[in-house]
Image (cartoon, rainbow, N blue to C red; front, top):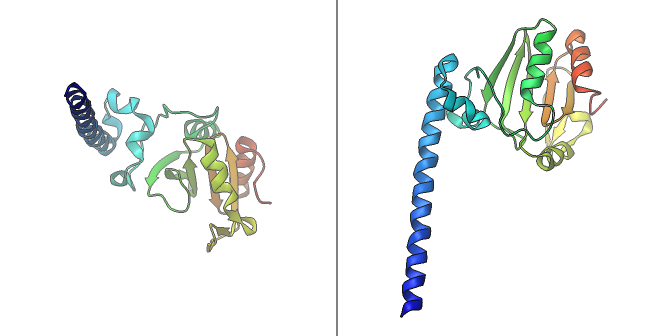
Length: 185
């Protein structure tokens, strides 16, 4: 009898934990969604959540202000990339996008009139797996042939995968400078 009571008590405790966890997750999601919508008026609490606030579907298409990354997995991330390009005099905007071919949050990074796709990974294993799915010098991803406007330029540094579909040699030179050599050249 005691054994059944103990099992019942343990089950009840576990179920309570699950319900509390679910309601907390929903509240965090609502708080971070509201913070993204406010742009520069974000609360300190929302800023501390880092990537969590910009990976949801409700943030797609919104400019991400004051981006912070509290889950760094390397010594180079989206914050560093933005700072590097701004140090060269560029106005840089980060816009949250929905995921597509890769298993990481996607951002459109506007550097002047140029647009780059930047994927910010939370673990290096997933980044390497996604890079291995790119074939035919970047024209095929996961077996799907992509239609690029120009020749795609792929870069990997730290936790970032950066794709530039353009031909501005100044931008390409800065990408080489800050991110290293192209993956498929």
